[in-house]
Length: 410
Ligand SMILES: *Cc1c(COP(=O)(O)O)cnc(C)c1O
Image (cartoon, rainbow, N blue to C red; front, top):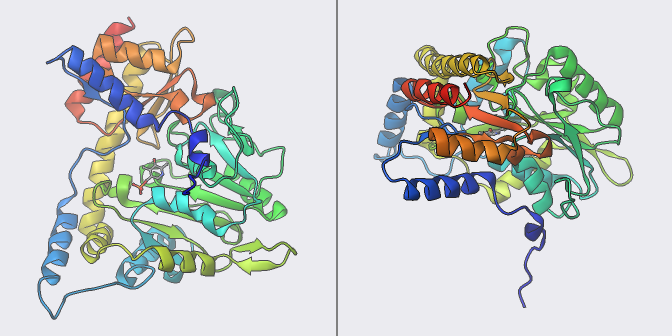
C-alpha cells in the first residue's frame, strides 16, 4: 500500500490564487464582455528590458555551436553571475559577501520552501502574519505542525502578528524561535524594516542561536536611502541569516526563472549535543543532489541586469511600477481608505471599510467595479479586514481601476 503524506490534508482549501481565479472565472462567465482589471496576483506585466533580451539571445546562440555549447553548469551557478551579484548587490552597499556563498537557483519560492530540509525537525518556526503563504504552507507540508485551529493558526508555528499598531513590523516572539522567516519589503503589506528594527532581530538570533530566513524579493523597490536592502547590512548577520533574492520582481523574471540564495560560510546551526556546524555545506549538498542549475542563457540574461544599460533599464521599469503604486495610494486615500505600503514596495495595503471581511470586499470590487485584488485574509488571519492591490499593472488600467473604486466608495 502507498501511504499519502497526510500533512497536505491539513492545508486550507487551496492556495489563495486558484480561489481568486475561480471567482473571477465564474464572474466573467456570468457577465461576458464585462471588463475586468486584474490587480490581484503578484505577477509583473512589463517585458524583459532590451539588454536582458540581447544577452538572452546571445546565450541561446552560444548553445547552437559546438565551440560555445554549454552542458551542466557549475553547481552554484556561473561565476560571472555570482561575481556580478556580489559586486553590485552587496559590495556596492558596503557588504562583503563572497561570490562563493551565493547559490543561483530557479526561484525564491522553491528556495524558501526547500530551505527547511537542511534544518532539524525539532526547530520552532516563527512566521509573520500576514505574509507570503509559502513559509507556513511548506512548514505544514513538512509535518512540523499540528492541525489548523479555529483562528487560522497551525499548531506548532509561532505566529507574529503584523498590524497597523506595530506598523506591520513584527515584535520579537515571547516563545523561543529557532528559525524566523522575515520578508522585507513585505508581501502583502508593503512594510519595510529600519536598520534599528532589523538589528533587534539579528541580536535576538545571536542571543538564541537562531537563524533568520530573510526574503528580500522586493529590495529593488526600496527608495528610502535609510532602509537596508540586505539583512547583511546589520552587523553580525552573516553568522545568523540566510538571504533570498529573486530577479522575478527586480527584472521581470517571473516567467524566465532566476533567483539566488546567500548562505554565508560563517552561518552556524547546532546538533543534538549543542555542537556547532556550518550550514553552507548542507545547502550545497541539498542543491547538488536535487537541483541541476539554471539554464545558461537565463543566467546570462540575469547577468545583463548588472551592466550599466541593464541597471538603467530595469530601474526605469521599477520606477514605472512605483509610480503606479503612488497613484493607487493617492486615489485610495482620497476615497477614504486607510492605506499602507506602496512607497518602498509594489503593493498597496488597504483597510476595508466598515469592518468588511476581505473576501466580501473582493466580491464587491469584482462585481460592482470589475476590479480584482487580493483578500488580505489569504495571507494570514491578521490580514482579515485588509486588501492588497498590486502595482504590477498597466498605467491606464491602474487609473481606470482606481477611478472605479473611488466611484464605488464615494
Ligand atoms: C514573488 C515573491 C518571491 C519570488 O519568487 P520566485 O520563485 O523567485 O519567482 C519570493 N518571495 C516573495 C515574498 C514574493 O512575493
